[in-house]
Image 1 (cartoon, rainbow, N blue to C red):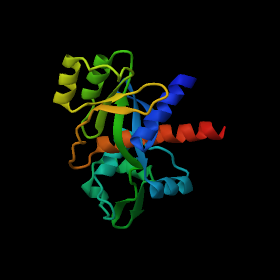
Image 2: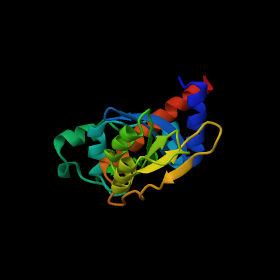
Image 3: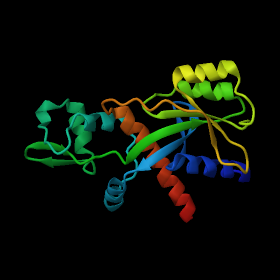
Length: 207
């Protein structure tokens, strides 16, 4: 559970990103993630009674299907066909084959790493995929950044946010824009992890 102090910091960072902020653990590393929810897909899933789809095996199978174009089962590996059979909430099965109805529930825009050591936070951020913007947080934004840490952050495109209680976050070092490329299953997967946390947080608020 968030303490009063950490809750204020969380809210400040959420205002900074302008997106829904969720706490995640990906590949053993904890972070805050700015999640841009897709309202249409969210509503579709609510109507279907489907939550986050985090199975990488299923997502890989869905990746083989172009949106709106049926694919014959014969064109797919047998193991993928079975998984698609078991996922009517993500595909339509017609005489022509499987047609993907799945869309990602949103987009992960950025990730924010924090901790007692800015150097460690920068190191964790630079190890994360650059398909999103990456930030590290320091609570001592009124002091000059340590030169070695700043150099590493600049080299790897990691932004640094100064955060101090009672004050709005400050950009001490801008982050490089996210790398733009062909969407991949990994983008879907991290979006599903963020969506899972988003749904959990909403449930906690209702309770």
